[in-house]
Length: 318
Image (cartoon, rainbow, N blue to C red; front, side, top):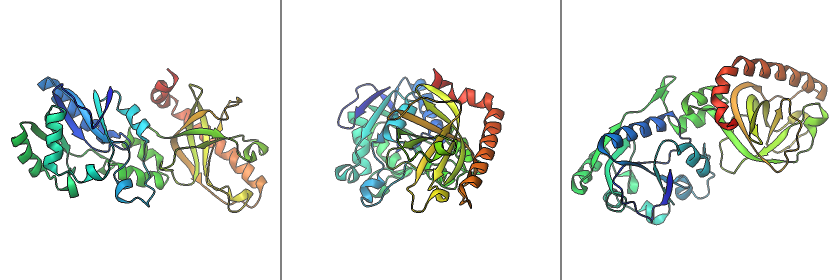
């Protein structure tokens, strides 16, 4: 895969689609699979126009937008699905393009010969680019056009918004079905207050990039990838109410059978299943008892899915 800027050009004839592709979920993969089918049948390269930051950050500058993937994570997941990624900065100039202007650029500057759009995707200023409008432009600009219907899972349309709702409700398993992979938080391991170590459950405190969606507060069965290897783990997202008031939100991962210094290293936590909600316990001793029970539940759950998880995490162990 080659990444180029929207200010660059592409001389090879291409089949193209556009969108934010946040999460690169199963619906996105379906779109890209169809794009590859079209490209193969017509002898074209595949290209995707996407954004470095979500358009909402432009339209609502004071609002913190939560995404499923950073731009770097998105690019990594797109690698096997498309030959060219055309990266855009969604700024004032870009936002004011009409549908005609945008598609003219794709056809002339990037040699677009086919345009594939999602069922409800609108392009151009004020989302004016309906499918009928796209068809009209395609006739003038000499490219063909097609539309793909939505993918459904668990009775609802697969979308980035639906996945965020699931994660924010703690349903990481349903989110995983829509994503096609376990949701991931990655970041630098930092020093904490050593509270977990004092209770016999040392944790890696991970600080993900700003703007990532966090699953709901609680305890999760997870897989932690660090130093190129993956380990069973248990992750708590929350405020640790039992050990004090007004604590900051933390992501703390107890990595099983692991005793290495990983401070300042990058680690990734992959969320497999939710064990329980965050709770306020009457004492630290009661919390310790619950953590032991959580540990047993996590091990049983992850061991029961060992074949599935081996398949999922082979890429991380390669």
